[in-house]
Length: 140
Image (cartoon, rainbow, N blue to C red; front, side, top):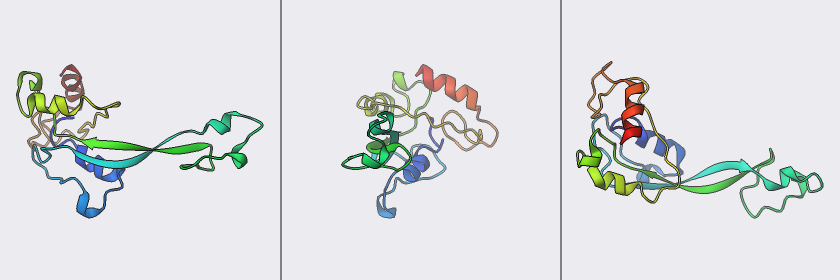
């Protein structure tokens, strides 16, 4: 997402970071310069829940077993700087930003649904357009 969209807020909420290791948050562009890394868990269906003869009570999962038929698997989350229009041409963090994404298996697009910041992440109440943000971020 763009700067000031809430990426670091989401990262801090989703990871197991202690308060001393949380990503800094502020209502201005490029609070995050270098990527932040944290651990989180993702819920996936437990394979034993699909086998009638095994059942959840006989599941021998080494870790992450949940009684509701899911298994929690550890994942690494990476919080990166915001993307600005023209990053592919070197604007903002430019290619450094795009390089920070190359090792990702999955991308999460955090959108400023409130429209409280413009395309560059500058606080401008009502100046942002979430639909427009989605379009140009996908284009970048």
